[in-house]
Length: 300
Length: 184
Image (tube, rainbow over all chains, first blue to last red; front, side):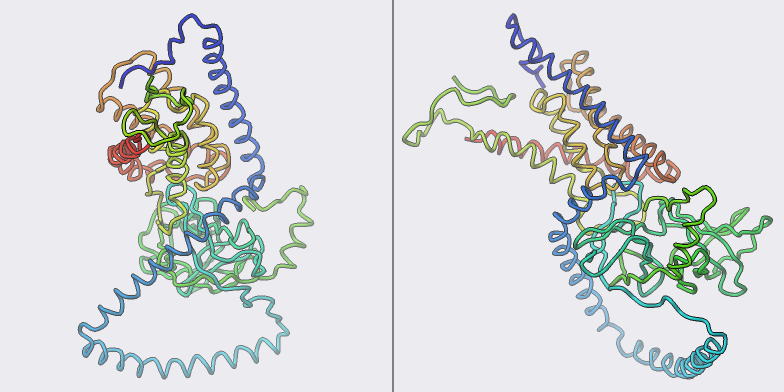
């Protein structure tokens, strides 16, 4: 490309000053951007209103394209269901028969569980869902793993509420707008989830890796006790996530823990349930009496 | 006198009362709005329902911005990295101000390169854009790591590769938009 005509403004003083001014503005603008960055690093919630406005503006388009994508997926599923329908039918019938007994046993256990809880006077604060929405977009170009939910404070969604899909835990709410909310996915490096192994309740923590996997680290030091195929569920420690939400499946053992793949895939989850925080009052009280007085929840 | 095609200037002549078939002028609105709108819309691509488990979607706003800057030097003012970057920050999920800073630094870097290597060909532009894309993505990761826990830089490799390979396509889109912008 030819050199632009304005680079050598000639003998005109006005043009020379004008060119100089653009450089001054450019450098001043860079400094301002750096200051804004420092503010947002110090206080991550500072510009939440601006981001919420951005999400609100683009939400209708995202909703529209999301419904198209979903229809396309459904059509594909419906079409492929016609192939090998007979053999699939036979297999499913067998499976239903096998599951029926288990279901009856599970129902009996549920009744027994409720009775025992009643004896112990345990009160369930949670389990109640706040609202059901859809994930309409995600920050696919950034290293942060944040998704946008199609409903916001108009459905009573608040910060720090857990979000789960039919398959398992998706994340938690970090920002709410009038009709959208932003969800910090469990695969974000910032999201720390208290979990346990299903078989023996081995307590552990999960951290996202940013590449679709999570790292499971047991609380006890020592050799990794995990095996490939172990199912991890939330433990309910900390009072944010309700216990026993399906979380992840171990795919590789490492020296001090395990790599696991979350069971809920945000791109394929038909809906997302926002739930009330488990033991929200206990959690609030605990944070109020934090010894240093500044035990603030990060990124919230 | 015909307007120079590289700079946005006001038409020098008052409008005619009849439609002239030759020596027509470009629409000022189109000349101004197309570059701005294309960069902002490219930044908004992240709000489409692409759900990825890792950062994979190329930063289309940055690609479009670099394409306009390298294809038409002098069209975007030197300070334009700040406003475009701040708009991109609203949609990217990065801490606010991150792209504002990085895009502005990229703009200044291109300005310095422009003063040294004046006559460049397409491959050199691609190389410059590739280096800037890599720098901005790594810078974004570093900034995200200052505010929050950040993943390993290795997760960025597929995104970098995809962005560099998609840059020529964005330049072509940009060139089409440019010929539409300057059409009379």
